[in-house]
Amino acid sequence: MIHAIEQTRLLVNAVQMSCKTIYQETLVGYEVELGASHAWVDMWENLTLMSRNLTTLREELWDLKDILRD
Image (cartoon, rainbow, N blue to C red; front, top):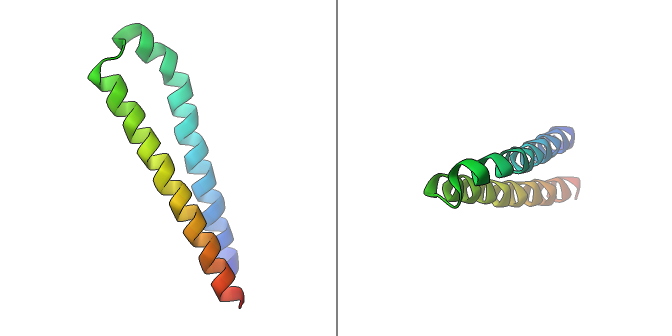
């Protein structure tokens, strides 16, 4: 079970890094094409929220791992 939690945590990290990469790679394109339009702001807010949720999930997985070890 602990191994599964560790693997899930690694997956969460990978998804979070993907969110950051998507944001960084598209940032320049959206600024040039859309300026501060709603589409760019929505994308940024969605990626930020997803990143926060993934951080919370990663922390909860770590807590669960500690509980299972005890």
